[in-house]
Each structure stands twice: as C-alpha cells, then as structure tokens.
Length: 541
Ligand SMILES: Nc1ncnc2c1ncn2[C@@H]1O[C@H](COP(=O)(O)OP(=O)(O)OP(=O)(O)O)[C@@H](O)[C@H]1O
Ligand SMILES: [Mg+2]
Image (tube, rainbow, N blue to C red; front, side, top):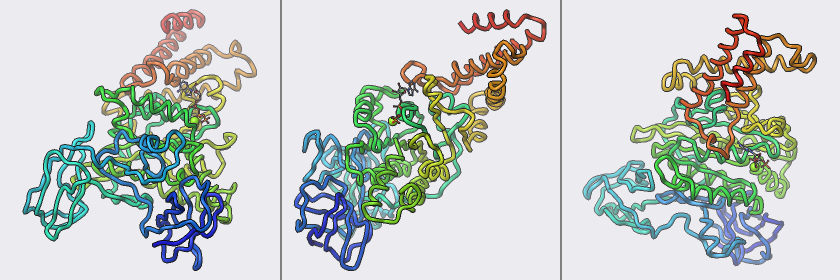
C-alpha cells in the first residue's frame, strides 16, 4: 500500500494511506524509516517514526505493511546486541558507522549461519502447530524448534542447515522455516500459568536472605540519582542462576552500555563460557530515538518469552523504566493527547501492566516449566516514590527493593533500605532455602530482622543520650546491628564478594548472630562490657 507524507512534526508523521490498522508498520521517506500507526482518522493516518526524521520532507513516499511491528524469533538470538527494533547493533555499525542512520533493512538473526539440525520427525509423519519437530544446539542450550504449520511431511532436512532454507516441506508445498516473526505487542501464549515456587538466586545477600525473588516474579528497584541501580542490575545480570538473561538499557548512558558489553565479553559463567553467550542485550541509550525506546521493552520481552516457552528460566532486566515512561510521555504529547498525572498519558499504568504481566511461570507443551522473571529499575525524579511511574510499577511487582540515597552517600552498597523494602515471596523463598540449605534459615532471618528493627528503635535514644548512655544489653545490640549492616548487608560489586551462594550467606549471618548470643551470655555471666566488645572485635579481626 503506497502513499505520501503529508505533514511532519518531529517523529510524528502524517501520511495519506487509508485502510491501515492501529500499530501497523509503515515505512516513510526515501530512506524507508520505519514507524507504526498510532492514530487513525478518516482522512489521515498518524505514524510514530522510530528513527531520526532529520531531512524527511512532505511529499516523500510512504508505504504501509498491514502487519504490526514484529521480532524475528529463532536460533541465534543469544549473544545478540540489538536496538529497540531488533536490528543488530554491530550490523548497523558496519553499515553506517558509530552514528546510526540506516537505509537498508537489516535481518535480526543471521540467516546464513550454519546449525546442526537434529529432526525428531521423519518423512510421512504428521506435525501439528506448536509441536516440536527438532532442535539445534545454541551455545549452552538445546534450542527446540516449534512448528508453525500443521500437515504431513514430505521432506525433512537434517544435519548442516541454515535458517534461510526450509527445514520441513509439507504435503501441498508449504514450508516450515526454523524462525518466525512475532508481533511484539502480543504476548506469546506459552501455556498454562503456574504459581512461582523456586527462588531466583541473585547472589546478593540482602536480596536472597531478606527479600527473595522467585523465578517468575517481578521486582522493582526504585532509587534516586546515583544510588546504584545500574550497578545492582548489572551485577545481578552477571550472577543470576537463570539460563538466559535479557538486559534492556533503556534511555541510559551510552558509556555504561559499552562498559557492560566489554565486561560481558570477557567474563565467564560457571561453565567457563563468555557471559554474553547466555545474554541478549537491547540497547536504546539516551541519544537514540525515543519511539524506539518505547518499543524496545516489548521487543526484549518477546525474545525473553520465546526462551521461556522452551522451558528455560529467563531473567529480564530493565534500566530504567522511568526513561521508558518519559519516552511514552514524549510520544503522547506530540500526539496532543490529554495528559494525566505529571504529564504522563492516562494509559501509563495499563501500558506498563501490559508488559509486566508477561512475567510468570508457564508449563510448556512438553511438560517442562519455564519462567520469566523481571527486575526493573525505576529512577523517580528527586527520589520521590509517590510519582506515577513508581506507583504504577508497584501495583504489579511482588518485590520492592528501595534504594536509599543516604545509604548510598555513606557508601553502603547495595543501598537497599531494609525497613522499607519488602518481598511478597519471602515466605515461599525461605521455605525453599530451609529445605535446600539449612533448617535454621527462617529462624536466622527472623533474628536478623529483629536486630535491625531494634537498632532502628534505639537510634533515636542514641541521638539523645549518646552511645555511652545506653544500657549494656542495648550497646551489644547496636554493635551486632552494625556488624549485620557492614559485614552482611554491604556487598561491594567490584570485589570478590560481589556474589555469595546461599550457603555462604547463611554461614555469614549465623556467625554474626552466634557471636551476639555469646556476648549476651557473657554479659549475663558478669563479664564487663568493655571486655566482651574487645573480644568480639579481636574475633572479627
Ligand atoms: N553494589 C555496589 N558496590 C560498589 N559500588 C557501588 C555499588 N552500587 C553502586 N556503587 C557506586 O555508586 C556509583 C553509582 O552507581 P550507579 O551508576 O549504579 O547509580 P544509578 O542509580 O544507576 O545512577 P543514575 O541514577 O545516575 O543512573 C557507582 O559508580 C559505584 O561507584
Ligand atoms: Mg544508572
């Protein structure tokens, strides 16, 4: 369907195409910039262009596709680095240098790459849509291939294949390829949803011990400027015990993304493979077009769902949703929509929910269970957590790790505030750790919380009377609480301590609690406080 550009206002372009549907993909201009339909009127179709519209002029051609924005799903996504439209960034750089301006469509997955295909069907067999017909090996994972067609097979490829060739031919001539397109805004069906049960081990003591996240759950990390959101997200991306990690850098600094890339190329996972091999990175840095930023979240979550549907555990990380919401606001105001709270569109909450709800545990067709967990950073302006984006995220999240500016200032990292953070998964998480790690897990967890809470209560007293004015038992408590904070909750991401196994976490907290109990006993037995404290400091080294 062809037409022309009739007006342009920034990235919002009107075209004279008729008969299109909302969210259909449109190419505008001689440069074939891609965009999607966001507003329809009888005489006019408004397109939000995902790319830089500099140089575009009225009268240039426009072409409608009658199909929505899609992503290509198939073997070869792992290790990929994409922009918000799933164009390979290394490919774009090759084509247009460091400053991206593309003129040719780029394939998202390498169709020429050779794969060792092991079919599980033979000529004469029937396949049904959704059924597995074979697999290839992608890095550390077996990548099952699902049929998108139904029929009887007359030809089956095997061994060395590439995705440009059909893998199966059906009676009647239809051909099954090893990859498919999927509309980004439509959740993949996945299968029956299941409740989340297993914890996602992040290696961060504060999270795993006090505020655990379950596989399939959603956590948000709100934090003001410089409180450690990016470092925390990237540390979790490195160590989380999931099969696949999808990391979306959404409107963040370009140099941080560059740092992440080079680090992931060098770092290795437990099996000695580069971390990048289990990671998909979607980058839309602050200097890239905003419309593609809005879509980047959906592009990334669709790829995450694809691996989840194979029965893998997938972790989706986004940094930061606030930048995503700002893109939404920018698009909405350029469309002259009626603004809601703080200028965000009134549909902010429902748009956010439409992708957060894509997290969860599903049972796949082959009876495996796959999970999609999300950890989403939010950067509320002025660290005001009552603002609309944080509030909208809170409604859908099961865990909430609030990063505290004053903790960050005192270099307590990760700056997770232990009184205001929470996890709805705490009970189920600790039941699991109790079974898998130690019986004493929930009890130690309770003790740890008590120590921190009592310290909070005593702090006001200390402000009035000073440490010296406290009773001996209270001074011991303050001492124990300091050790919990300094030696247990603090975890420097740039040291060997960046990751702790649940076993190590347990040993560390139980040593602190044991020493505290010993000190209390000594006090009851009449030992002087100064001697006890000296003994404790010596023991702690
Ligand atoms: N876990 C950590 N261990 C050690 N240092 C940390 C940790 N987290 C944060 N930091 C320190 O704090 C600095 C700021 O962290 P980071 O860039 O992650 O903040 P941010 O919340 O992403 O900031 P912005 O709002 O600007 O995006 C880091 O450069 C680092 O020095
Ligand atoms: Mg950051």
